[in-house]
Image (cartoon, rainbow, N blue to C red; front, side, top):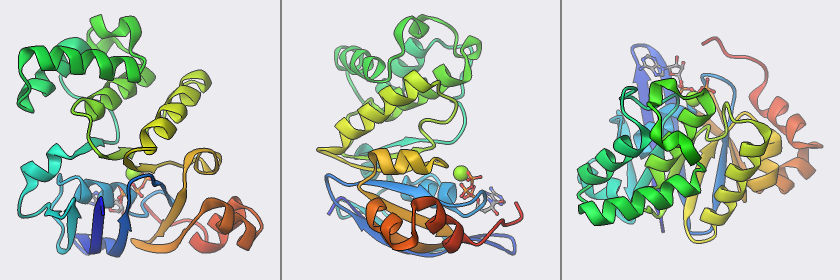
Length: 240
Ligand SMILES: Nc1ncnc2c1ncn2[C@@H]1O[C@H](COP(=O)(O)OP(=O)(O)OP(=O)(O)O)[C@@H](O)[C@H]1O
Ligand SMILES: [Mg+2]
């Protein structure tokens, strides 16, 4: 099993962000995390990736407990956080080399890994420009390349296609499908169409809890479309 998540919980002050999330993931699965703004998707992903400590519950990546052995777990996973990468004055090339070297790759290995990841994320000539001068979509691609650098088996991508133009969205979806054949992926998105197009499984989160976990087509058939399923299961807006 690639990933086991057991009863994860997190609160911020009195606000319960994640309220007992459990699921597991196998190689070949592409899970779409769906849910309204503030549902707890990002918080769950940060805990799985080892960047936020849960109040309770457990995450195991290849049977490695993330709380007990974070560094080793993180070698096996790639994480694309929400928003843009830091170090705006660096170029993607320097930034990615820096990340590769902090991950312990030799200079030669780092160079090869950066080239491959940059190609997968279609960075093109943007690789030579300061990150702060890049458009939102290109910054997103830099983050994606950083997540792919060490060729991890588990990828956790928080809104990977957010801000991308339609061509680039298609190419990232193709990449996700390709990666998903031999790895496990969790992507969050607000696009139901994207879930139908690339995900083998949809997990709907509402108010910090999983309210559905099924194949997108099953969910759609059961509720008269994925949009109807989303509406019924999440029941309107939650205050941010
Ligand atoms: N660092 C934080 N401090 C306080 N509250 C937080 C923090 N991070 C998240 N929250 C709260 O936790 C809840 C879940 O937020 P989260 O970012 O996980 O939602 P989300 O499902 O990713 O939403 P979106 O679709 O807008 O990205 C929200 O109520 C949010 O305000
Ligand atoms: Mg989020």
